[in-house]
Length: 213
Image (cartoon, rainbow, N blue to C red; front, side, top):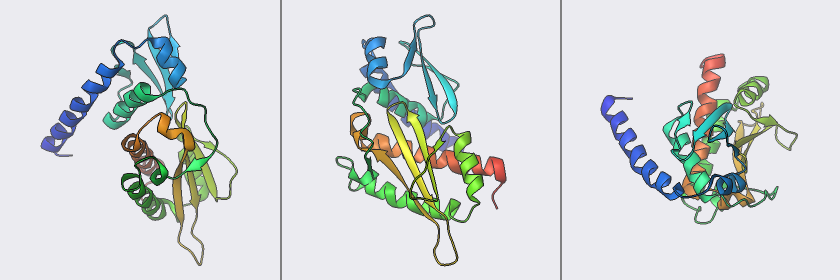
């Protein structure tokens, strides 16, 4: 990324991070832990979160994160901590476009996601994709797809990735799905941010592990 583009991105991140932290100020650690299911360590005054294969420590009440995260991963974590209300998972899956107000933004992500999965992973070896998903903390589960991986991006925010690999007649395809309770934890913009974080992590990790071919 060019220096000016990086500065612009960082400025936008800082402008959005500040109000997110302000909304969390004055909230008790117990309330946040209860609503998010993120563990809180009273001795160190830190929240302990596992997300995308990383063990993250979040200082309270400063909300600084260790190790340093991608800016959008950092920001959406704050948004989750602010919005979460502890609603139990429903075990019913929905598309991003089915979120409240998500027809345009969420539906656009659904289409982008399908295209990215088809292009990047549709003809890759299934065992490679399974190992990539596992390295990012996903659980592989049985389903009607060739491969189904559940990313516990946040404790109450699972994202389900389904892939059908290409054969002689059909191109590969795939999609991401959310639990129906997702609206209680992030709005559609936050949901799309999570989806993009997962897609980017998958593409980058595949390249790290297997190259670009």
